[in-house]
Amino acid sequence: MTERRYNAFSDELRRVFGCRVQRVSVDAGLTCPNRDGTTGLGGCIFCGGRGSGSFGIRPELGVADQLAHGMAYLSRRYGAGKFLAYFQPYSNTYAPVEQLRRLYDEALSVPGVAGLIVGTRPDCLPPEVIDLLAEYARSTYFWLELGMQTSHDRTLDLLNRGHDAASFLDAADRCRQRGIRLCAHVILGLPGETGADMLATAMMLTRAGIDGVKLHHLHVMKDTPLEAMYRRGAVGCLERDDYVGLVCDFLERLDPRTVVHRLVGDAPADHLVAPAWTLEKSAVLAAIDAEFIRRGTCQGARLSR
Ligand code: SF4
Image: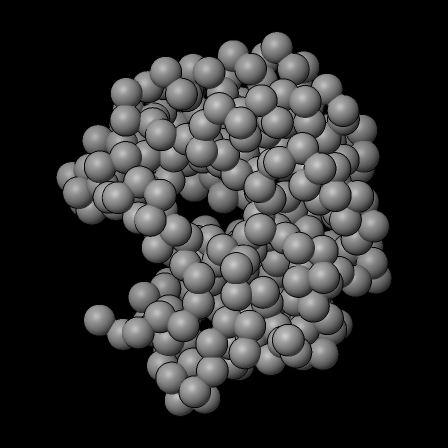
């Protein structure tokens, strides 16, 4: 096995639980303020109709049944011993607190579920929701995933995110004060961003003391505004080797204690427009390991002490 030069989530889970742990994605049937008109309409330009990362989930089933299906599959495929319920598509704190509590408790009641990951947006964290999340952060293994994508407001505008970098930092600060561990989503290769822009995002996360990061490259999915922009040549995608180099550059500037939850995005072949190398996830991860070894560096290597 290739030596890993970054603080991988799978290693953190093995340290905490002593066995292989898998995330199981759950669709709670919620929506997103950037789609329903509260913050914006149409959503982020890269987002498909069922929110980001919803592929393969069966929202017609309840939370417990979705988990049971996913866990049976992941047990067979990977021999996983424990599971984290991953509330992934849309904004999973965008509902009244009692509804959220019911959803999270239903997930935790499923035998084998050892914790929660909840994905959301910076504008879906009012004080009463932070109070609720702080309860779970005290009582179970818990991560809050927060979409940031970039530290640059001009790019956030172009993506139609409906929030700025300051709102992300404010939300992160409020979470930290309550002991809620936070994982930031970042996309590399966003339109108009230079390598220096992307590294500035890494430095911002390090300065902010973010607990975790989830990286992926900009990939174009069918039936999104981004697809139209891509087809008329207004945006392009990174080459695989350029992405590998950028990931290493990025991680070299990230605090070594920051947990790396993901380094390559997932996209099913029948929904993907570009780049084709998105489908070669294992090869990309191996190339990142190899590039770190070639450089003789690791996560945090370019931070001054
Ligand atoms: S915030 Fe998430 S769910 Fe909402 S439009 Fe953007 S990517 Fe889609």
